[in-house]
Length: 260
Length: 312
Image 1: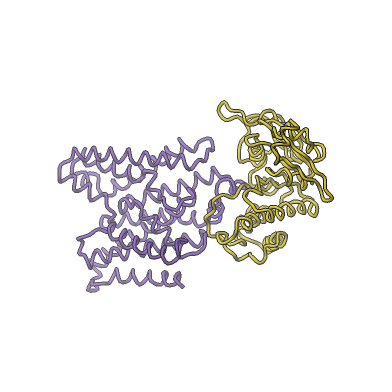
Image 2: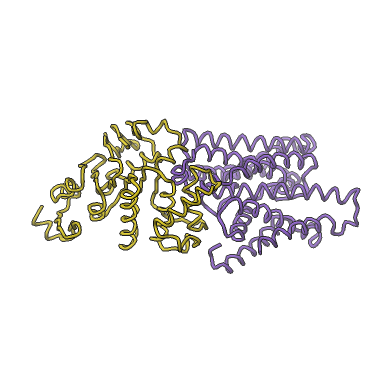
């Protein structure tokens, strides 16, 4: 699917990514985790072609992404960044229609309308389709943006902190949607996520980053261990198994003193 | 409803402007007025398109291309001309020569600015804005400095050039300006969907497959042509574009450029017509179009803001 070879990103004399080589498994959900400033978002932005890498290559199905026309790239890779202040007066439907821009350059065909409909259905947004974005809650707006990204019909989706500023219910809805995208439609999703519990319970694969380098990566069970997370975040973790997945507890300072 | 009213109002205003108190004098009064009407239409289209596109690129609704220093360079050029050639500069170069030189100068300025800042595909709009703002101030200071060296008679000419006026335009100038603007308008009309995507911001535009740097350079070039034409035709308009664009957004209730751009043109033309009518018939040239436009639009915009409770 997508492979990174010796990727470096340098700003002035500050190294943000140092020699990152990775292969992301196709048809799986991969979460990028790690402390702030570890280079997770930078890595994602390089893959999205929003930032040029300083050195190294990124290959999409064996092809250097720099050699793919940007208009073609948008039909293979969809990116969603954090939705910050957004003040355009658009309806949900109009926003989702932008997802078809890579195909029809804005002149919607019957096919496009069907894909827009399906994307709205997929996230349960039909009731809101004529609502204006500035009238929605943060969670609903994030869902609308995700629907636009889904409407791009790409094999690969890159999501930069899709759970940022969301309440628990919306966060769960978004993660369930991502899971279904992968399980039902066979798409590959790579996302940056800060909540270790969402990463652990909803992804197949985890890439942990620290100080611009890959700290560890692999299937969830290999990466999400008490010892590994402690080394990654510098915090004591207690992993509590339950009938429906498991919970990583890092909230007790007293516990940290015992374990560290 | 409001939109249809706006479209109907326009021909009515144009007719009133042509015929009011003309005594149906088709040999002198009406041809003269047709030239002014042409200047109003061309300048209105320029200001509306350039302001809306500029605000889309900058992602900001309180800016106009005036912030880039285009008008600053025009005024500086006029000041240099007057200082160098005296009050005879107008006669010496002829109005055409002056207008064409001004257009060339503003386009050259814009080309340099973009080449310098947007090279290597760095599409950083904020750096461009900052530099434009600083240059505007520097150019303004130079102009003031030159004005100090001029005689009172020359100074009053320069002062006159600093205001928007539809009375300076010559028939030939209106004609070639109109043709140039029509060509640009065709390009703009073909790119409204790209503008819609650009409005989502750089990252989302790239994610949707736009070559952001190239689109930005093209749109900035179109803006430069529009501003150069309108400034050489009717003088600086400073921040009138803010009113035009925001009134259009409020009336459109849609962010799509296919709707907002024509509406902004109608708003600009309508408000210039109204202001010129008032200047000619009510105030007998004792006030200027700039002052009236700012007064009328300011009041109307405030009313819109109050009515829609701050979400135009």
